[in-house]
Length: 246
Length: 246
Image (cartoon, rainbow over all chains, first blue to last red; front, side, top):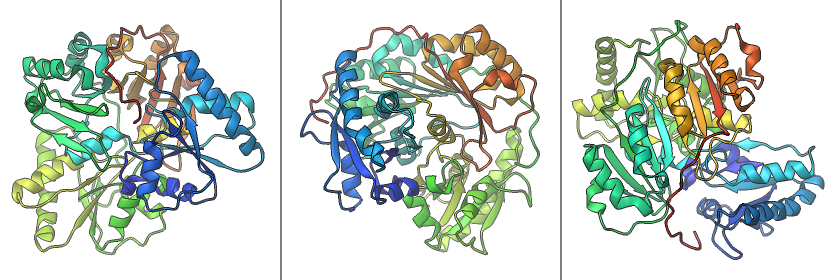
């Protein structure tokens, strides 16, 4: 089962995930390369819980080559399916939320293609940008607001197209475009409506409200920006009849 | 402090929220009208925890009239500020995540306008659509995907504009437009890529994969749709240099 551990703070692990981790299920966790560190395992370590001796690292290389990835998912599935078939539960530790930019979906597909009888449970978790919004007191959405969550890599022209439609932009992986994103914010008068967050939810989380000060600076790969757009022109909202008491 | 309780399942409450609820802090929870039920309190009740006798209902009417709302925030702030000034913590119970379509942001602003020394802590939680995605095994986002979270009330023309840009649409409050959204999905060949979820995360959660079967049916006001768009034309993604081992 996918056990979402939230963004990094041990306090943001759900009670269900905590319970599963202590249930005797076999822990699995993703690493980028053999012997590499795992964010997900790091979160588990910070709980103070004993790491089971048989916790299993599964290698998922950071690549966009779909053949290499497919081989990695297949290899991981081959390792855990026999365990599941022997009757032992497997807890796949996931940073953040298992449905949101996680490796778990692919793995679950491979596992179920090998044995359709295997049940998959996904335990939802707190996504990193929700944690970032909470630390920054940054409302992601108020009534009738719209939110776009977009990797910055699609470029500024894409942001130009999206901006008129959204009250909040969550811009992921801003590192490679940071300087031009800052210029874009300035052009759109949004510099004071943005917050930069590095390693959201981790103990090393860094939050910069004066985003212009980051121009030319080096930042971590795990960086995002939360941007409020106070200028969205709202169309009329079609409302339904609401129950008086919900 | 804002204590996000997640989407409804007691297992999806974070450990930090659980701890705060048992810390002796004064509980506050939102209701739509005096004597009305509170979703947030309902989640707390389902934990089996004793509800403190002095838990305080705060009335926030369901209206879009900003004057009525402002009066409600002010009234609520007047009630809790003296408590905070006397040194007692206040835990404002929030369904889902406090930064995502919650009433807390407004309340916090009023509280801090009355006394700027009051510290506000926001404990992030699992949003309802992440819980819905987990129950439906519906990936909200895979690598480099884009997500839009949009109240359905902005209409189908808005959806037409957004669709080419997003891999996933989370359509909130679909009730008043349900039939036309179903037609829109059919026109865009997306009927099999959508899931309908009513009361996501609550014990009465209902999930319908055959969304066309809902045509003409009555659904609850708290309904959303998760829609995957397998046809998004992706532009090139500008990638940064990634650390080898993260």
